[in-house]
Image 1 (cartoon, one colour):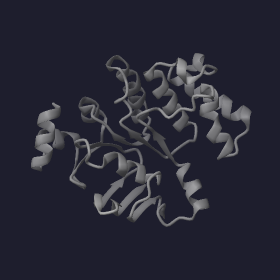
Image 2 (tube, rainbow, N blue to C red):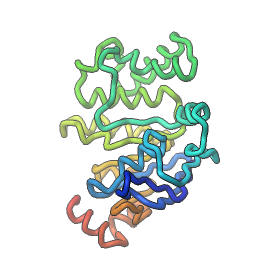
Image 3 (tube, rainbow, N blue to C red):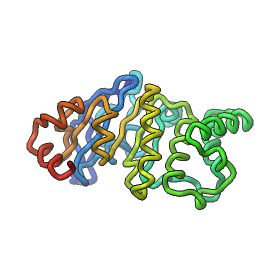
Length: 241
């Protein structure tokens, strides 16, 4: 489904990551782990071209996002949802308008169809009663659940999560992780940058460990957490668990 070939990102002379290679199959849940500053968020943003790679390929169902025209890229990116650390909701729009904006503008859905879908999705995360409020009145957990619904409203084939719980109060983290667990049960393909070790261990199909600009390990959760192969991974786990 997604194939990453020799992906490299540099800022001037600073190499963020270099020659990354990986594959994601439909329905996979990938947890991308590693120390702060390892390049995980930059890597994630490059996968949907929010950040432009320096070189390499990102193939989505065989089509290379990196070499696509601007018009092609718009269509390809509709298949890749993104949930950010800081929610990134439009503060001047209601919850409903936040969710329906892209389906109407990008996919050409009618307002009625987009709103019906938004209400259905909000019900699944227990927030249909918040459809007409503005983001400022939401808790962090509620705002992040709305952000997930906004991504789902585009019918993506994969959703990228960039530390979706790191900005939340501890008691709100479970609200968001529970929604993500349900998505995993529904075979939603997900790549998740996270520091939630228990979630990564219990929900992931694969763990990708990133450090020093490389994907140093790609293992099953059992393999990674019980038998890490690199010294960097061992050191990381000793601090996290």
